[in-house]
Amino acid sequence: MRVVVIGAGVVGVTTAYYLGKAGHQVTVVEKEPEAATLASAGNAGLIAPGHSFAWASPTAPKELLRSLTVEDTALRVNPFKAPGMAVWGLRFLRECNAERAVKNTLVKLRLAQYSQRMLDQIAADERIDYDDIHEGILYLYRDPKRFEAGIKKMKLVQEHGQMQDVLDADGVVEAEPFLAPVKHKLAGAIYGVTDSSGDSVMFTHKLQAVCERMGSKFLFGKGVVRLATNGGKVRAAMLHGGESVDGEVFVLSAGVQSPRVARTVGVRLPIAPAKGYSATFPVKRKGGPEMRVGAVDEELLVAWCRIGDRLRMTSSAEFTGYETTYTEHDLRLIRKLANDLLPDAAEYDKGTYRACNRPMTPDGPPILGQAGPDNLYINSGHGHMGFTMASGSSRIVADLIDGKKPDIPVEGLTLTSRP
Image (cartoon, rainbow, N blue to C red; front, side):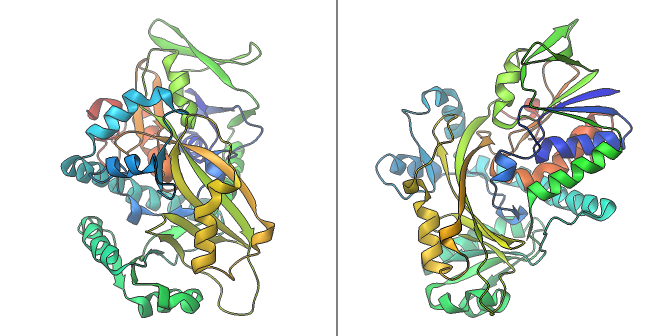
């Protein structure tokens, strides 16, 4: 079949890969000049099934209310910049009870675990090096009470197959000697033994080359204005400038732009942009142990890892509409973490910075599978876990297109199987 994939982030390109392997004629349409330039380029670099917890939780409403008056909250909303979020916000609040939080977390965890296996398989089959490090991830705590709460919280994913160890400060240093100078600041950590990290841009570009060798075409600088239908099916993607791309099946993987495109055929996708901040610094060579283990500070919710000779750090989820501006003030959590725990890790005066919008669903899991016209499929809404979930999501969507039963249950992932 002729399949048109809209979006060339890590999700769109992995979708093209699986469809190409299945023998389909694939065309990928992307409005940016190259693959993986937006959310895929600004992520933390973590492949973290161990951090699959749904953002919609019993504590989230209080955190959002605090963000109106307190600056240093990890989850923030600006009602003046995001006035159109009322419906999405009500759906989010509906998910903020303990029962739904557990259900949504387990849906995300199931997908993330499967996706990590698919990512490893792609890398092995196609011999893709993406500066990946398979040394686990540390979920760090500085306050003993928060640490105790974190241990209880993490039992949920541990009970469902996620390998994690509880470490005291000495154990943290044993797992990551680079943190020895700040051991006195740490209460301990949950060590996600099987979690990993890597460069999603490098991975996506190398996988694009694999797709092109299989015959897939990539059209860059071609934004989709709308989908054209006839007889209850999508017939073409209409592009800026009057061009069009015909196909027999269409896959929408356009991140935060997916709802706009879907609305042109009457499909409502509950996806909102959550802005995050990203900083990348050259690693400082000082002759001591190299940083190996990615980490998340569970107090500031700042994540980091080493990607080759660079240190990547990310922070915050701010609902401010579709804008991606930032100021020095917006980077304060990253600066604070760097000063507190990683003062000698990088050349902080040589950083590059960006803000990007992550496509968030109210309940947390992405939206996969058929929606609206019977030849339109969705692969979007992965939030801050796009790299973690991309490979598994794309394999599932490719299987659904081919009429195959996916390897894992899709309940809670399709548009029709969620409330």
